[in-house]
Image (tube, rainbow, N blue to C red; front, top):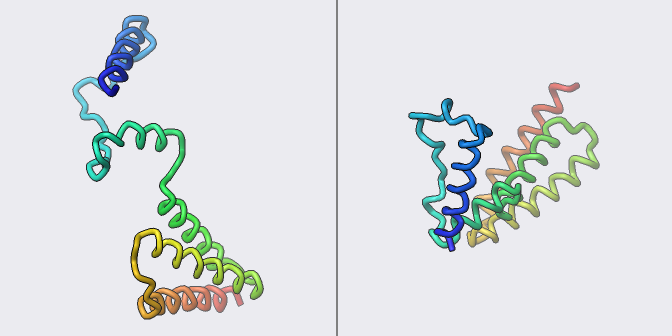
Length: 129
């Protein structure tokens, strides 16, 4: 299956070069960009690449992005109700991420994280006042 896809791709590239649609001079003698797909099983790499190019991310990465967005929102948020709501959502997302990873939910480990989040929020809030 992969061999057939490679053959089709090579034919399309050769045809584009022949028609002058693809300028290969700027890529000549330069290494291809490296991908970090070494941890992905070989039989899943093509599917993973297609999904990645289409903009789909693994659920863990989506959750990490959401956590970062909430942390950024908390850093600038001045409304106390919104802040509490977002901290609850952040708490849920961190627990969800730990569950996805298969990590045991350990409140002591999370305590330091939440202390830092609250400290960051407090510092930003005092700066605004």
